[in-house]
Length: 172
Ligand SMILES: [Zn+2]
Figure 1 (cartoon, protein in one colour):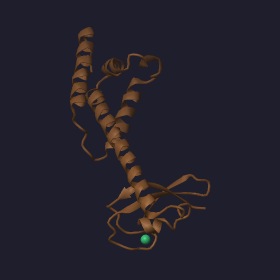
Figure 2 (cartoon, rainbow, N blue to C red; figure 1 turned 45 degrees about the vertical axis):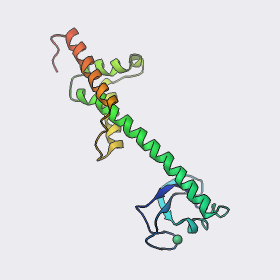
Figure 3 (cartoon, rainbow, N blue to C red; figure 1 turned 180 degrees about the vertical axis):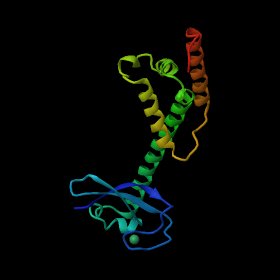
Figure 4 (cartoon, helix red, strand yellow; figure 1 turned 135 degrees about the vertical axis):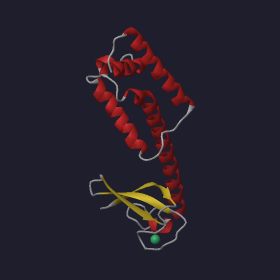
């Protein structure tokens, strides 16, 4: 049986996939799971009264579905904001050494993660992976600039300066 899981609510898609009604104020967003309960990645939008007719949701009232959708959306928004914040911090930390040599990358990476040396096998791979993940999260959105990201930018500059002082002949 197809299962519908409430993901949130949106006013961007205002057409009900169940009955085709258009110009709804909001729709409830579902992801559709297959018979084994695994998400298919397919989204389904429905008005809250149509949602009460979907398999697995027929015991709920439209008001309850709307309320669950709002809570799920709030949680998703908080998660997304935290991810964007993390991504902004990663760019502030490692952006300045992205195209620099492994020595400077190590100085910055292990400046932030003094106990990382045992875990990290490739400094360049680690830094590239973090930056790629941060850019995936931000997509086309600009990286958030906050007091924290400014502070991290200053720390990165400090790690780089300390490294260059210890290695005066360092070539980039
Ligand atoms: Zn409908």
